[in-house]
Image (cartoon, rainbow, N blue to C red; front, side, top):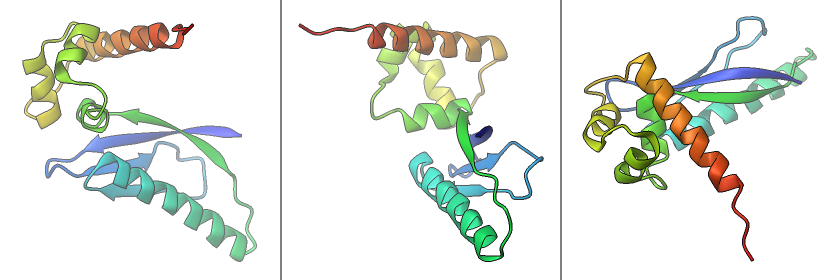
Length: 134
């Protein structure tokens, strides 16, 4: 099954949108919402609707899996329930004030800072997956 990149972005009005980053399929799925979770639910509902419509019309539907890619504001907002700014600062080395600017959309991280945040999170995730309890 093909994997398609789905881009999650925060708009200027604070809402979130998701769109497929693949022009080779005969369909397009998008979703919007007040939160990332709401936009993802709308997006996945749209995917199921496309599958149903193609089937009802007797057309072949290529099923795909989605790999979600976040802009920084979307990621920070979506995972705020689990990752505090203080924790993110310790994990990534990026100070809380700057992270706050990214969440609020008052500034965007450079490619170098984005990479630093991503690498810090991946390193932390690897540490967590290695945890064993007795």
